[in-house]
Structure formats: C-alpha cells, structure tokens
Image 1 (cartoon, rainbow, N blue to C red):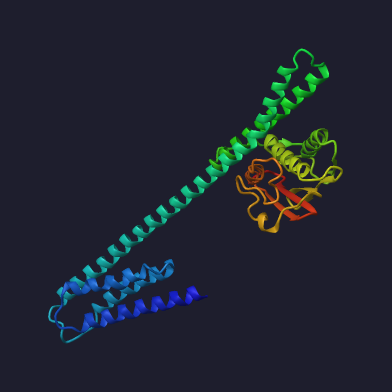
Image 2 (cartoon, helix red, strand yellow):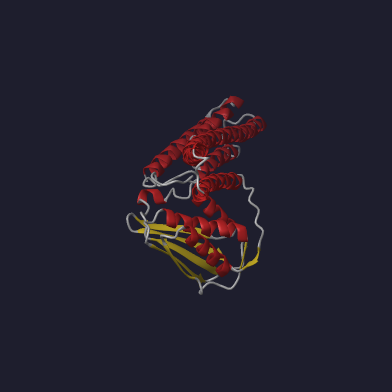
Length: 348
C-alpha cells in the first residue's frame, strides 16, 4: 500500500509540473521553440515511476497539453503558424524522449536479469561441484578399498569373498552411473532438450514393475501398491515416467527406517491419473518444501543421506512435460506424500 501511495504522489507532482509548464507556455508573448522542450522534463520524471500505466499516462498528458495549447485563442499570439510549428516539435521531442528512455530502461532491466541469471548459474555450478566432489568420494573410496583388498589377499581369497567384493564394487559403480545420468538429465532439462516419445502405455504395469524392482533392492522395507483405480492406459513417455516413479520410490526407501511401509495408490480424478507415493520417513521441514524441486537443493535434514539434489527437479520437469504436476506434503518425523497428476490423454 505504501508503494502505491508514493507512486500516486509522484504522479500528481509530475502532472502539476506539466500543467505549470502548459500555462507558462500559452501565456507568454514571445514564442520560442525552447519552451516546447520543457515538456520533456515531466516526461523524464515520469519514467522514474515503475508503473508502466503511469508512464504512458505522463507521456499522453504531455502531448495532450501541447496539442490543446495550439488552439487556445490568446490576443498575444502574433504568429500562429510559428506557434503551431513549435508545438509540433514539442510533441516529437516528447515522443523521442519517451522512446529513448523506455529502451534505456529496458536495456538496464535486461542487463540486470542477465546479471541475476549469471549469479544463479554461478551458484548452481558451485553447488554442482560441491555435490559431485562429495557424492563421488564415497563410491570411489569403496572401489579403491575393495580392489586393494582383492590384491592383498589374491592368493587366499574364497569365491564367496570375491563375489561379495565384486558386488560392492558394482554397487558403487551403479551409484556413480546413476549420479552422472541424473546430472545429464538435469542439464538437458535446463536447456529444454528433453524430447517426449508419446505412446499409449500400461501405467499400472509400469508402476507395478517399479515397485517390484524397488522391493528387490529394499528387502528391509514393505512396499504396498493399490493401483486398480488407474486407467488401463495413458498417453505418455514410458522411459520418463519410469524415472519419475523409480525416483520417488527410491527416495521413499532412502529416507524411511527399515521395517516401515511405503504405499503407492493410484486413482482417476477428472481427466488425470493420480498416483500418490507415501512413506513414514524422516519428513521434510516446512521451510524446505518450497525449494524442494529446485536443482541441487537438498533438505536441511538430508545431509546424512547420499544424493545429488537433482532427482526431484528432474521428476518435476518430466511431469510438467506431460502436462501434469507433482506436489509434496510432509511432516517432520512422520513422513511425506508425493502426488503425481498426469493427464490421461497426454499433454495438450
């Protein structure tokens, strides 16, 4: 409210200045073209008002006063033709000044936005470097350690021990590959280089497959699903949706204690297939929910868990590409619910 009041006071001051110039203009005996240029003064003042409507009004009033001044009959007018010509020059001056100031302000705005984007890109790059250096260190340490032990005990190692250490190495490699793929997906998403390959797919079968896959790698969790309420088919990109639900389920497993239940429920609401993934994990602080889908952002209570901070950003990007949306609800210490809304007929 304060900004509006200040803006209106500024506007009235400009109009008062214009009116004063107008009466000074039409009342003096001598007519000089320099008087016409006085009209640019309130116009220039008007462009310091941020509101575009007020700016246009200021310019309009300037030109209107000039034009009206040409037709006020005063006995002191000695040469009406000269007066009218000077007023035309005044109108042109106001227009040219307005255009020049407008494009100058537009350029400043563009440069300001470019600087802000550069700062954001720099901050994102720093976050990426920090994330990569942190997330790669653990799997690389595991790989190096397991390889070193294999070399040290190569003459006495049992087949079971070899299998155990090979699985540990493969798990670490898979973790690094997933991280790299997530970063590549994030880069493509930010550059709008994700291409949808739409077809009618069995959404129930896709979710069922993802649930079974997660159940195999998360044997200490219970994964339940109720998806009979979903439509038989939806028009979507199978690979992108597989990433979406695999990521949401993997997060639910990661942030939940062993023995807890993770549920997936699907239903139809209007023209949307709606899938909710619910966990009983650590939850997300309320102050972090608004930033949850930003690239490289991680909740303040997630520092003890591995992750790149790009998964949910990619999830949201893929869902938006389908014309849908994804929402998050959470209570710290009680769990989270991620709900995906997908248009059944695909993006419009």
